[in-house]
Length: 216
Image 1 (cartoon, rainbow, N blue to C red):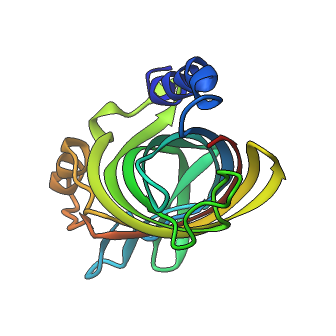
Image 2: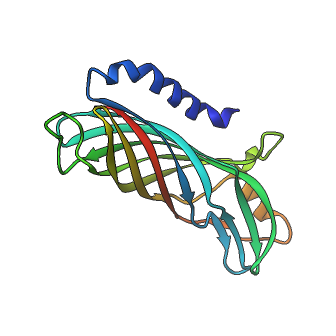
Image 3: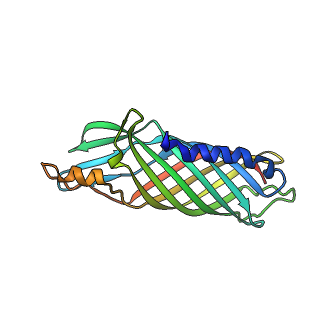
C-alpha cells in the first residue's frame, strides 16, 4: 500500500484542482502508458543480469502555464504487474514482483504557443527530472532490503489532439536516464558465497503513453 501513496495523492490532487483548471492556465492530465526499462544491474564476469520487464503504467500530472510557450508540470506514475527476471548465462533463474514509482517535475515548451482560442498548440517538448522508487516483492512477500531510490533526468515530446474547447488527447514519448541502482540487500547478496559482483548501472528507460488533458 505504501508504494501506491504517491499515485493516490496525485489523483486526489488532480480532482481537487479540476475547478481551478476551468478558470486559469492549469491542466490536469491523467494518463496510461507502457514503460520499457533497460538493465537494472549485472555481474559481467559471472554473466548474471537483473532484467526488469516492460509493464503498464498509470499516472497523473498537473501543468501550470507560465506564458504562451512555457509551462511547468509535476507528476507521478507507477508500473503494474511488472516483474524482474534473474538471468544466468542466458537462462532465467526465476522472476520476482517489481515496481517502479516515479515522481517528477518538468519544463514544458510549446514552440507553437497557444491558439487564438487559448487552447495549446499541438506539439510540445518536455525536459525534467525526479526520482525513481524501486520496490521488490508482492504485497504479501516484500523484500525491503532491496528497495531503493535513484535520481533521474528525462526528455520527451508529445502531441495534443483536440477533443473540445478545453480537452485534448495527449500522446507522448519519453527517454529517461536513471542513475545506477544500489541497496543494502544487493550488497548483502554479493557478500554471500559464492561471491558475486552484481552492480547497478545507469538505466535507459523509455515510456510511451496517452492521456486526457483537461484545462488550459
